[in-house]
Length: 121
Length: 231
Image (cartoon, each protein chain N blue to C red):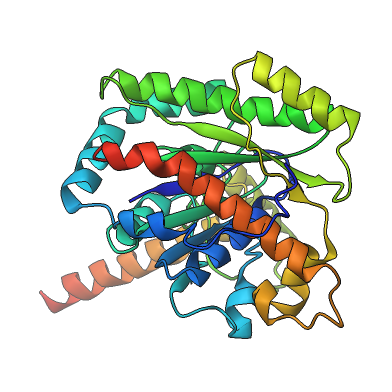
């Protein structure tokens, strides 16, 4: 059982009997493997041989409403305007104050566009 | 023709040493051999990079769970012998490899703790064989347990007991054992075949070479029935 005895001459003569797998045999084995894939996956699961490959990662989706980088805009304003700004933002359900400013600027531009249009007519 | 998987969910069972020794001996005798390193740690990469690999031994290190079927297919139609050194964990890559294997060697240290882990591999092979039989009547996936790291000078009672127990369960066990030898460990120090090592630096080279040759011969004997099938 030790396997330490000298190897007889020509002991490896049978090596020449082995040839590469024929494409037909390879295809037959592959077809069988494909056919049995569901059962084989089940066997892997039952015997506790799970996949250990890292799952392919997809780019993370931006959360709804997420915006790009922001910059600070500090504006001093009268006390009344400050309170009016906060209450209008609350009424519209804004949790970020800049959204009310964006709406106000959009409304201003629309108003100006309308005025330009009526002035040109 | 044969694709031989070397598998055990137990790390340190001697899979890589056995697979590399077997591949080197077959290559030494002139066979064209492909050895797939399917362990994420790529234990054979250093051996390949050292540049002492025989020309007729093709080591493939880029093997993972997703491409192993393709790697086996590519090599099995080009090389008479394809050996797969699998990772020592219970992972899906083992299952994927066994789907395309013709024979499985299960290396196992001579201890009952290791026998328990080898039992998981046997259970997997048996279940996988049954699953394939539903699609290919008469399909067989033969396997044998290879005792490894056993004392080189004597047989222990534990080892003898294990042989008896495995035989009682109908499990085929190699007569040859991969003995605990410095020369086998030196494969990963010098990254060259045993025959190229310096006997002054590595003791017991002759014994290790004879051991590896005996393993290769017994593997060929076990593969012989495959010649009669079209696998």
